[in-house]
Length: 134
Image (cartoon, rainbow, N blue to C red; front, top):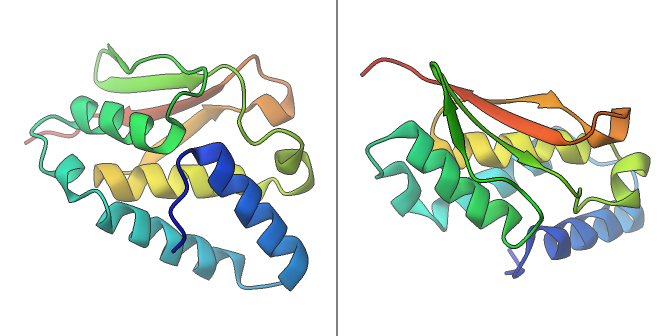
């Protein structure tokens, strides 16, 4: 996989690649790319706390994007992206939001959900991890 410095650079590359190739197995491509990104950052899953893992994954995936740090709320941890790095690409290809969730899930080692989406008119994109016991 080509190394990109930011999530935005990666998404621009992926969007161009998708336009060139046309219809492809998007789910399969997303899964492979998410696995590759997680394999590049095994240190994240080694962190003892899920909120710490989510914070580390946020930094890897979104870099310097305008996003909040992870906050703990009861049995949840979440962060928000205020200015979407997907830009117009997300309007043309809404599956990019699903890809972000897949990468976060692979990096953290637990399912990360999305509760708000800029592309549907919400004020931010919010990603949430529900704490598990153990």
